[in-house]
Length: 109
Image (cartoon, rainbow, N blue to C red):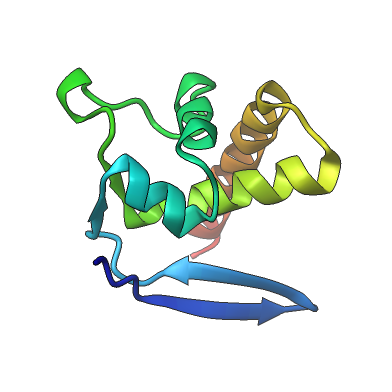
C-alpha cells in the first residue's frame, strides 16, 4: 500500500491539494488511484503530452509532482468540458504563464 503525503490549500474559495513528497514513485494502477481516475485516462494524459514523456522502460512510472499536474488536468477537463487536446493546450499556456511570472519576479529582485 502506498502512503501519499499531501497538503490542502484553500485560496479565494478554491481548494487544491499538493503532494508534499514529490520523490514518491507510483506504478500506473497506484497513480490512477491517487488521481481518482482510471488507468486508461492516465494513458490519455501521456498520449496528449499532458504528462511529461518517459523513457520506454519507465513509461508507467509516475511521481508525486505528476499527481498535482494530472489533478489540474482533470479539473480543466471537468470544468470546461474540454477534450484532451484542449486540456493539453491549456496546460501549456498555464506553464508558460507560470514561467513568465518567475522571470518577472527574478528581474524585480
